[in-house]
Amino acid sequence: MKRLILSFVLLICVGGAICGQQTRSLSDNIRTVQVIVDDDPLLPPVARLGTPVELSFDALTHTYARYIYNVQLCNADWTPCEELFESDYLNGFNNQPIEEYETSFNTTVLYTHYSVSFPSYDCRLLLPGNYRVRVYEDEFDEDADPVLEACFSLYEPEMTVGLNVSANTELGFNQRHQQVTFDVAYGQRRVVDPQRELHTVVMQNRRRDNAVVDLRPNIVKANGVEWTHRRELAFPAGSEFHKFEILDVRLNGMNVDRMAWIDEQYHATLFANTPQHNYTFDPDADGAYVIRHTGDEDNATMSEYLFVHFLLKMPQLPYGDIYVSGLWDNGFPDPQCLMHYDNRLQAYEVSVLLKQGYYNYQFRQVGNDGVGRTALTEGDFYQTENEYIVLVYHRPQGARYDALVGYSMTKFNGNR
Image 1 (tube, rainbow, N blue to C red):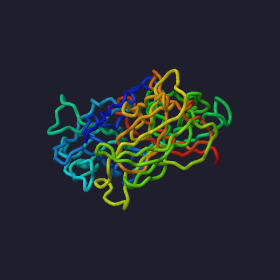
Image 2 (image 1 turned 120 degrees about the vertical axis):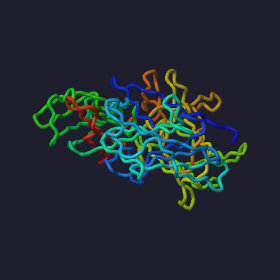
Image 3 (image 1 turned 30 degrees about the vertical axis):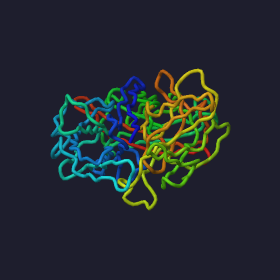
Image 4 (image 1 turned 60 degrees about the vertical axis):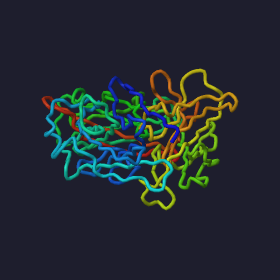
C-alpha cells in the first residue's frame, strides 16, 4: 500500500469543560476504531451497566502484534478519576492482551482485525460512569504512547431524564434551529446542591465540538431541575446527512459516481455535492456508519479498504476550513478529512481511506473555535431529523467520582 493517512483528532474545549471523549486512532497503522454497544453499530457508545460493549480495530498488516488494553474510569469531563483504586471500578484483570484477532481474507489491503468485549471473563466494569480504553503495543507502560483510545459510557437509570426538542426556539419559530428542553427527576438519589453536584452534557448527533456542557438549570425544585427556554440549547438544525454505500469494489454503489483501480488501490469517487437552498427529506443514520460488503457475512475481515473521494462544489469561502464529517471522526474535526479548494474545479475536495460499508457524511465549516457549522456548506433547516442525547452525572458531597445516573436519547424531525 503506497498511501497512508495519519489520523489525529483535535481536542476541543466546549462550555469551559474538557470534552475529551475521543475514540480515535493514534497510529497510521490503526484504522476503523469502533465501539459497538449490544452488537448494534448504529447505537451511541452509551450503555446500561452490564450491557455488552465491544471495542474493535484493524491493524494494516497480516503480521500479528501483541496489543494490551488498559481500562480507566474517567470523570464527567473525561479527565482521569484518580480518587478511586482500580479495584473500585474493575473486577478481574486490567492490562491484558487482546486475544480475539483474525486476518483479512481476500483483500487488497492486508489487515488484522482485533476485538475485545466488556464485560468479559477477565474484566467486569462495576460503576456507572465514563470509561476510556487505551491500547498499547507489546506491553502496558504509562509513559509509552498508545496506538488508540476508545471511550464509552455506562449508566444506571437512577434519575429520570425528560427530553423534548422543538422547532419553536429562542431564536425564532420554524427557522434554522432546534430547541432542546429537558428536566431531571432525582428519584431516590439525594441532591442537596444541584448546581455543584450535577454535571450535564447535551449532544446533537453525538458531536462533541458543539456539545453544551454543565449548563446551569434555570428551574430548581425539591425533586428535580429543569432547563427551559435556554438560548444555549438552540442548536443549528443542519440538513440531512449525505450517504453512500460501497458493497462491491467493482460496482458503483449508492451515490458513487465511479470506481477505479489506481496505483494498486481501489478508489471510489462520489457524486459531487452542493449547498442546499431548500430542505429535502432523505432518511439517514445521523452520521453513523456500518461496515459491510456484498454477501454481508464476515464483514470485519472480508471488507476492503479504499480511498473515497468527496467533492463539494461551491465558491471558496473567505474564512474557516471545510471538513467532511461523519461518525468515523467521532464528533471532532479530523485533519485527515480537511478539504482543499481546487480552483479549476471550483470545488472543495478530499480523499479519505475508509473500509467498505454504508456511510453518512456532512460538510462543515470550522472556525478558530473548533466548532463545525453547516450554514454555508449544507444549510440549516428546522425540519431536519437529528439525534439528541442528554447525559446526567451526579457527584454528591464527599463522593469520589462522577456517577452517570441519567441518560435520554430522542430523534427529532420537524415534519412530524
